[in-house]
Length: 139
Image 1: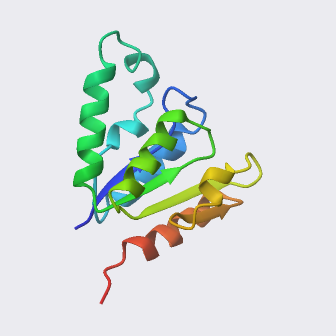
Image 2: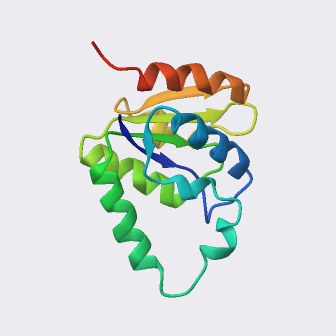
């Protein structure tokens, strides 16, 4: 079982939170998602509690170092997700980035970095077969 760090926008906007939840639930069929809270529909209200930033940073960077790989949905731009992706690269953690080509143009800082595996999609249904390939055991 792989430990997956799922990254998606929280403070940058929650327009894709239902998709995050679906992706997280899909991954959880076979593997562990360390950040299942990203798919919590009520998170946008809880996330803005005062004096939580340092605790969030320490928790999330700990989970990143513990993870086997990162799967990020980057349609909604997020400074935090960008930081998480660079942090994962710094520690040699494989990163897979998904984004909806009809809704956004991925930052050149991501698409121009050959470290990242980029997976553009036109429909959310295209995400799941790619996730299957990413998570399938290597022989």
